[in-house]
Every structure is written in C-alpha cells, then in structure tokens.
Amino acid sequence: MTINRICIIGPGAIGGMMAVKLANAGFEVSALVRPHRVDGMNKNGLTLLDEGQTFHAVPNASAQSETLGPQDLVVITVKENNLKDVAPNIGLLVGNGTPVVQVTNGIPWWFFLNFGDSLEGTRLSSVDKDNCVSDYFLLSRHIGGVINCGVSVRDDGVLVHDHSNQLYLGRPSNDSAGVEEVAAVFQAAGYKTSVAASIHQQVMTKLLANISYNPLSALTMGTLDLMLNDELVAEALIGLMNEGRSVTKALGLDPGPDPAERVSGGSRISSSKTSMLQDMEHGKPLELDGILASTIEVAGLLDVPVPMTKTVYGLLRVREQVALGQGAQ
Image (cartoon, rainbow, N blue to C red):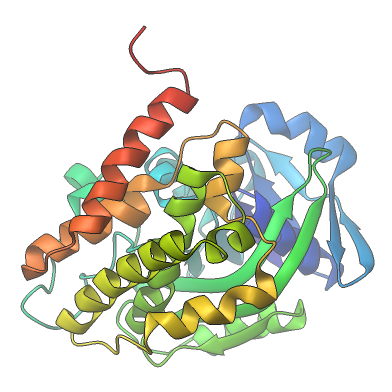
C-alpha cells in the first residue's frame, strides 16, 4: 500500500511536530482537532523550530472525521486519558487496511491483548473502562508507538524541538508485518525510527521516565535541572523508577540499568519541561490515568508494591483539582 494521506489526531507538541515534518517531507497531512482549533490551524498552520531551522505547514484541520475521509495512515498522539473521547471518530478515517499508529506515554489499553502470559487478554480499567476505547479499534491494524522526543510549545504557539528524535514502532502481537512500511514514512520525515523487537519492552522502558520526571515536575513546577540539582528530589525520582523497574521485571521484561545512571545522565537535557509540566502550566488535565493509574493497576495484578507511585498519584489528583478550579469552595 502506498502511504500519502496521513491524519494526525491531536496535534499538540508531539503530534504538531509530526504534522510539520511529515508535510515538509511531501505527505498530504490532515489533522483532527478540537473545534476551537480548526480556524486558527487552517489559517495559520503550525510552525516548528528544529535545530536552528524554521519549518511551517498548514495541515487540513477539521473537528469532524467525516470531512477528512479515509486515510492511508492514521497517527494518534492524544494522551491516553483523552483517547476515549476521540476513539468513536476513528472509524471514518480508516480505509481498507489503513494502519493506525498510537503514540503512547504510559501503559496503553492494548498492552495485554497480545501479551502471551497469564495476563493475556487482561483489559485495563484505568484506560479502557467498559471497553470504552478497545471497542473502536481493530487490533490487527494497530501499531504501538513509543517516542523519545522533547518538544515544547511557546506561548505564541510555536513548537520548539528541544532534544531527541527516536521513535519505536511495533504491533501489540510483535508481528512486524507492514510495520517497516510505516516506519519508512517517519524515516522520510527525519525521525530515527526503529521497528521494535518488543513494543511492550519499549513501553516499559519509557515508563520509568514517565512515572518519575513527569509527575514530580508537575508537583514541583520545576524543570529537570531544578529537580536533578536537589538531592532529595533526585532520590524520589530514583525511588519511583525503581518501582517501575519492579513492575517491568515482574512482567518478564528487562528492567534496564540502575536508575541512578538515568538521573545522572539527565544533565544534557536538564532545562527541558516535561509534557505534564507543560499541561499544568497551560491549565490542561494531566495524563494521570495513562501514566500513573495504569501502572498502579498493573502492579496490583502482579502483586508488586508501589507505595511511592500511589502517593504521588494521590497528591497529583488533588493538585490537578486545585489547578483546574475543581477543589472545595
């Protein structure tokens, strides 16, 4: 299948950068966005600052999937907690054999549907309650995506690529059929794209950063340099990562190196803002279910204690309520 028409669902920081880079690589890019973004995106497009260069693109934006029509490739970049809202709109974008790539941060809804052990087929209520997501997808078309890429959004809406550009793709079944063709699309757009031998491994490897840097940055409102330079916060980061490693090991996957090495190696990108910190600053709901609640749920299935993760999850639930003005009056 030739891939030309590509729809990005939820072009925020990561998805917006993808839209710009894919359009500049010659693909026909559209975007499914919230109604309030349609006019502005169709008029002004998206601007990306990347390695000293400025790139611009004007994706065909719409809030209605039927106006965009069937695509050759659909790329979902909305956060896991928003996926239930857009899932019912996916069907009209999918043609015969259209692959669907979901770029994920935490443990996604499909994680155990082709896992192959005693948890095979387990559905995670934290991200797929009452099948509110999975009912709208064909698993045979689904491709998981894990990206290591720092992108921030300036107050004027300009996207700034801060660091890294690695994308891993893989089917929940880890069958690589057709994934190379999709990977070639992202490679053409400048992404360092690899077909993962195990997409589950890549999900859990990234989770260590997701359950540590992301939530603590939202609690402290601090960039990485501030957190890493405080020895007590650095210890908390390591503690959260170690809980994630315990869950990863219980799943039969590689828990990776000592978290102290990851923390000490963070100085190169120390001024970056995590996605959760950016959401907090912009008054957006946090990705708590997809990152923390799903981790806690999986830990419970495996009888792995994660007390620090639970504590941080509770603190952030309250922090989010206050930030969004939902606290007690």
